[in-house]
Amino acid sequence: MIVTQLRIRDIRTDGGTQIREHLDPPTVEDYAEYRKAGIRLPPVVVFRDPQRTYWLGDGFHRVAAELTNGGLTIEADVREGTLRDAILHALGCNRKHGLRRTNGDKRKAVLTMLSDAEWSTWSNRRIAEQCAVSEHLVRLMRTDLARAATKSHPEEEPVAPLLPPSAAMQRATAIVKAHKRLSALLAALEPFEDLQPVREAVAEALRRLNGDGPDPGAAVAA
Picture 1 (cartoon, rainbow, N blue to C red):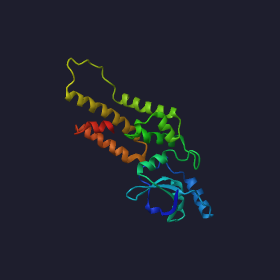
Picture 2: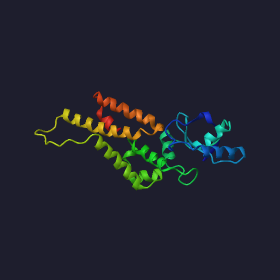
Picture 3: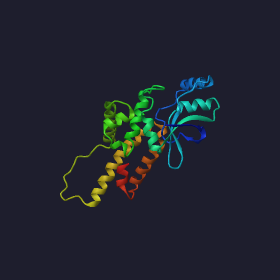
Picture 4: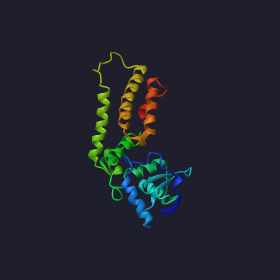
């Protein structure tokens, strides 16, 4: 572990690594008072990517407390990794220390993974372990997302084709399925301001589909 003093202005906090629904002002005030009294808090955790950008993975309340006191630097545990590494770390933070997570915080962590093209393919058990939640919660949220997609776009009665489907029909089917998945995901992301970049990417994929974009397969993967 490499612990050093970092300038707070050099630490990025806008990459979607804040998994809580919001900061807790009383906790920020308590931490600020601790620092004024000379009490040392655990170092925040940051991930330094290949471009030497520092992404905050854990410690939003501690950073806010230092800023409240007019501080310019903060003690940080610096780890090598990418923004995605920082997000993965943040997903399960505070399971054993710090301000206890709310149920909303836990649901936001799970939704972050279920909204990701790669992480959504993980098993319910693996997502639960990463987010430090029950597998039951992950299973319920995955089912709710699927059910929302079905309600938003109910399936029509299937009709057996007389001839094998053409390439055009297969393409149209892929576009319809992608539209259902993306519409449901866009609705699920609505309450979370911190996931705005993800929501914008989903919205862009929908716009491409509505315009019959060049690569519907990419939208399906999203």
